[in-house]
Structure formats: C-alpha cells, structure tokens
Amino acid sequence: DAAGRHDNGWPNLDRAAVAIERADILMAAGQDGRDHRDAENYPVTYIALVVGLQAGGTATRDDNGLITVLVPRDTTISFEDVLGEAPPIGEEIATLPYGKGGTTFGNVFIVPEPRPDHQGNPVVFDDPDLLGHENIHTFQWAGAGALEYPALYISESAKSAVHDAVENSSVDVDVDVDVDIDTYDAGPIGPSRTPSIDIPGGGWIPGVPVGIPSIPLPRFDPPPVPVGVDVDLDVDVEVEVPLNTGCDNRFEQHADLEDGHYDSCLVE
Image (cartoon, rainbow, N blue to C red; front, side, top):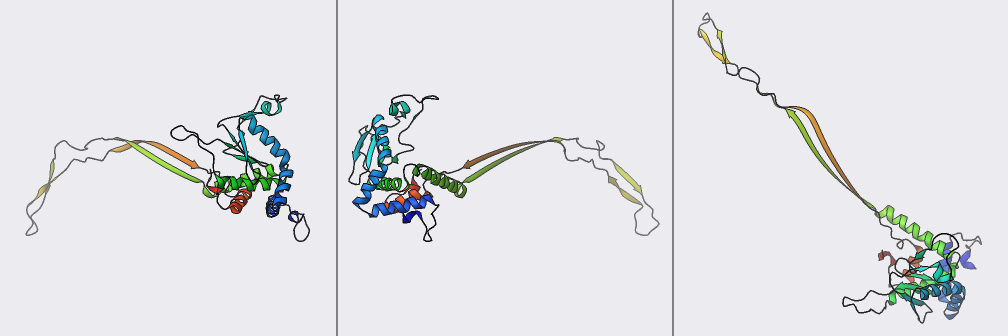
C-alpha cells in the first residue's frame, strides 16, 4: 500500500492524508475502483440505508453508485427504530438521521427533503454539484475504512472550527460612562454691600493729591464645591466566534477540489 508509507518506507502517520490518497487511487481506477469502494463500504452503506428508510425516506441511486435518501424534515431516528428494541441502558435517544443538513455514510447520502415553494408545492431535489461532492466522500470512506473515517473526519472538522474561531473571531466592546457630580454652592462670601476704604494720603510730594480715592471691596462668589461623584459604567461586550467545520477540513477541501463546483467553506 504505497499510500500508507513515505518514500523511505516508513508508515505515514497522517491518516487523513493516507485516506485522501487512497480515495484518489480508487477514483482513478474507474469501475474497478467503484467496485472496491462498494465492497469496502457495504456494512456502513447497509446500516445507513436502513436508518434512512426507517426515518420515512425514499432512496434513489445514480450512475456513480451514490444512494440518496430523502427523509422528511425534522424526522428523528432512535435505537429502537433501527434495532427493534430500546437501548439496554439510559433513556431512549432520538436524533436527526442526516446531521446538520445532509451527511454521507458509506455510499448513502441522507438529506432532508427540500422545503416546499412559496405556494406550498413540493420541490424536487436536484443539486448535481452537491451530489458530485458527496460522491467524493464515498471514496474517502473506502480509503479510510469504516472504523477510521468517522474519527478522522471529526478530527478534521474540529481543527477547522478552531482555526476559523482563532482567525475570524471578533469582539465588539461598547462602553457607556455616565458621570453625575454632586456639588455644594456656598454662595457669595463677604459683606452684603460693597464698602470702600479711604486711604489717607499726604501732599508732601508735589503733584500727588492730598487724598487717594476709596478702594471698593467686592464680594467673593466661589464656584460650587464637588462633594460626591456618581459614575454609571455600562459595558456591552459582543463576541462572535465562527465555527466553520469545512474551510480547513482536508476531506471537504479534497471533495471541493475534485468535484470543482461545490464549496463547503461557504456552507455554515
């Protein structure tokens, strides 16, 4: 298995890269690659098909071997629906069978039915770009194997979400400060009338008048004195943390690149 080893013969520990390289080999092999994919994915394909049909879905198969199961929106599936009995421990758990908006398991793409149009008429599901993208995932499933692919995909999604959060998070801080100062006004200080003082003068220097005019004493009105400060501080912090799991997910990037028409980075 050349995909699983480096040129020097050492095992390639980057399992996601190994799975993607194996997927490329299978896709390049034509019908033989599709046959190998179908055989490798058979257990997961069978279980996913049962889950989708139990959820009320309808299945179609295209020329690439991708099985699309349209299920009613908001339909849930439980252990009892699949196994015929409730789980041995804990409460019954029900979940959407298609994840966030459509998920491929093996060769099965489980997706919710399109919403009716504005007149309430049903809409036919027809998205060749999306189906081409999901078909690449079927080869990735076969390249990694049923035991490894879910863990690898979740790991890539988590890495993408963290990277998106670090690179594109934003913090908006709005600070509103209201300051109210209490003051004390003592009023004017001094006599109520404006008196004057006569300063006697001498006439012993020629040209100096005998008396100097009176100097008025004005009242002093000091400004108000602050006696208390009331500060009202309102801080509004808005943090936006995007968590796009597709932009830096190598499985999604690989499917986008190979298909060429679908951009998972734009899908929230």
